[in-house]
Length: 173
Image (cartoon, rainbow, N blue to C red; front, side, top):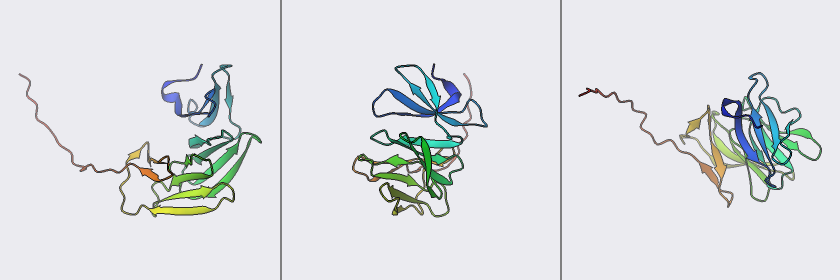
């Protein structure tokens, strides 16, 4: 049975709809990625996936992109070879795939020079798309979230709250 509650994070469906990749946090020292096969009800561990987060699966199901838990690199797992490749070392927030699988998009998290980037998969070329200096991201679970629209445009959550704190005096009747 697939673990529930505080033990799993960020389930991502494989394109065929037959399995889910999730981060198992049952052991805080491991935080490995696992695959739950809905047909066989088997759970397998993705090799060498310790301390990865924000994993996303390519549209064709061949690759899994994930950021290191410290947010300092973006890695790529090939389901055909069962090997990881380091795409780049930089601040990485939330990766996303283009609809055609030709690009992986990501923000630079909470770095000093925030921006939104994409990496072309064919030659691993890094391209800066948007400077996020002065943009106040919504931070959830210690990192901002980003994504892309179906047209490949950056999608970000902007914090527009006033950051004010109020206290109310309540008298019970």
